Image (cartoon, rainbow, N blue to C red; front, top):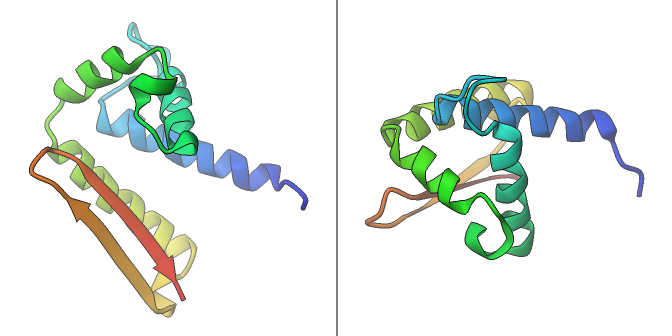
Length: 114
């Protein structure tokens, strides 16, 4: 299996942009950067565990999340989905959109194309 470096770069760039917009982070700003947050978020996602289990920035991530309105995540998700939907022509495919909602401000979204 060959690694498509361009695809990995685009994926990481999309994730960086998403987290920057959600948390109102500025590149090269005075706070921890999206790089530190995303590194720990990706580790947690790969291990299917909590960020506290695998990361060293869990407290900072939680504080950053609490300092912005939860609507930031909702609107940025919709904006990102629109961009990716156009790029991958999701409007031309059968798509199943699933989400898991809990009482806490937490959302997990998944898109499946068939």
